[in-house]
Length: 265
Image (cartoon, rainbow, N blue to C red; front, side, top):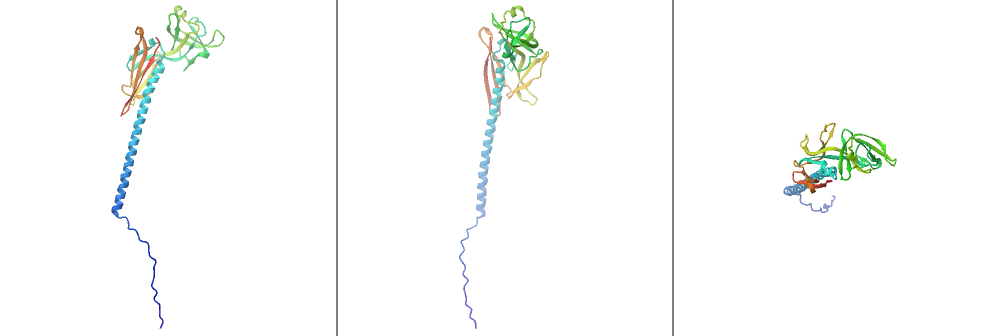
């Protein structure tokens, strides 16, 4: 009779299995994660709104500065008699489009300007432009229309621009020196206006062919009361400066710039 040995089955001990996450703990963790995400999203939204507000204020500030700077650049140094404030939002003046100095005595109605000293933003336009000529004894400016433009030579033989004008009276020609400054100008008007979209802008138009061109936008958008101008009187009641205040508004603030531009007596 065979004898079978009974060998006990011996197993290695297993590591303890950690207790599983309960449903309550899972819900609590998910809730905490959602709260953190909501706080983060809120913070990002606040940061975005602050950035947008800062951008809008910056854009408004630039629009106001641009409007004031354009007006200042156009009228600075002009004779006070050439700048007329029609109302607090409109100004009309002789806008400079070129300039130089004479290099010959006045002959008849022709002015000979040294080419090397001439600057211009465009070619002279007889139907649009006039000339301001500096006078001496007593000092002042004389305005005359441009009838044609061509080429010539200076007294020393150098190149020159010949500007024919309306007849200059002898009393005026005698007061024009050989090196007198001349300025090419056109009658321009800057004004606050509302465009088709409802935005308030600084616009410009000029005289052409006996009428006015359409208004072209220059700077903006501005506030509804975005341009205010006034002439500052000096000695003898003459206009000595133009004060310009430009404003641009956002939902949260109004940005403002003020400049005072000197005019010649």
